[in-house]
Amino acid sequence: EVQLVESGGGLAQPGGSLRLSCVASGFTFSSYWMHWVRQAPGKGLVWVSRINTDGSRTTYADSVKGRFTVSRDNAKNTLYLQMNSLRAEDTAVFFCARDLGYGSFDCWGQGTLVTVSS
Amino acid sequence: QSVLTQPPSASGTPGQRFTISCSGSTSNIGSNTVNWYQQLPGTAPKLLIHSNNQRPSGVPDRFSGSKSGTSASLAISGLQSEDEADYYCATWDDSLNGGVFGGGTKLTVL
Image (cartoon, rainbow over all chains, first blue to last red; front, top):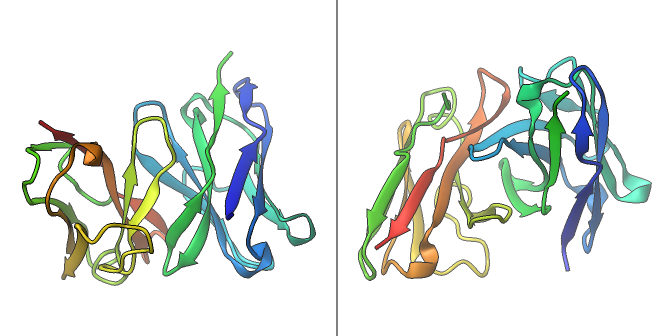
């Protein structure tokens, strides 16, 4: 079964850091581009970042550029999102998603909640 | 303010044919394929339509997608109570060099 499981969410103070992980199983992780998408409480979906198959190319939304870093370890079938300089407006459920191609996300994790508050 | 524009809410009755619109621009919908997602309350989004009009396996053929110029639409025929959910359109934006979503449409089945 194709599965993505996120972890690492929690409470962080403004200006603090968190690292999210997304463990993939049931498919050849190293063959797929991967993305992070977030959803603030009661709000819509917002694309955050993407990474290519070998980790050499990354892209970010303007709202997180310079603060967030996406990476992957294909040997561990794991995607990461290092989040620094966190702000209250970063509070959201973060989903990792597999890119089917053409920028469509055919498999999503269950999400992990990040709360930024003092 | 989302880059792609969808009506925030809509309602329909069981059995009805229903359409959700998604409006963009030349840098996003006009240049790239459109995908649609369904999100049931408290769950992760599910891919309904990719590449404008392609259904992943397991998605009922009641769901269909289309695109024309800088707009796209999702059609649901034979509306059912279990279709009550939030629906999002999405694509890539070449100017922003990033993914973009619509604000979502909350569909209520009366």
